[in-house]
Picture 1 (tube, rainbow, N blue to C red):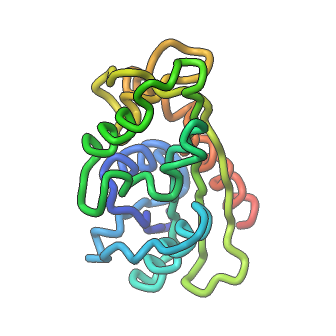
Picture 2: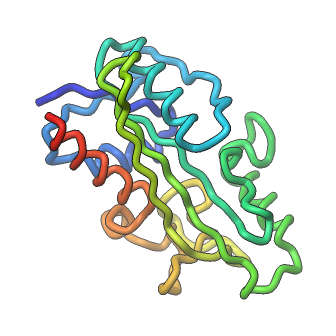
Length: 198
């Protein structure tokens, strides 16, 4: 088993990523096991931020690292909140506040104009200075509902109605969500690439 550190402090992401990596050849350790604090995410793209997090965790732990950066892009808002998804309602505010702000900004926007997608960039570095990090991106299409539905998932999941489905991401069983989500797609591609590289 190869040890790898998961560079995230988000409990929901850690749960999903550990479930997705179960049965792989990796022993997955959260960065909290090493007392690693999250770095400033000041990149211009999801890939930039994922790489910042992966290099930071690899440097602090001495292990290879996997990191993701992901968020919600809403077409009616010009792609916002995008890379600012976690801080949409302001620094230190939580998912409920973010969802409240999203609903407020979309007030009066018709159902047909509420298209959106989750985007994820997933990164693997062998060490902090890896000159050839593996980077995979994936999207998950849907639209924003008018009210929260479902008790599963995290973040914007209760408002995100999955394309081709009537359910929100928060109404899907975790195993099913992991099969089709942006994070699931990106992480499976990343694991295949790591396995091929080694």
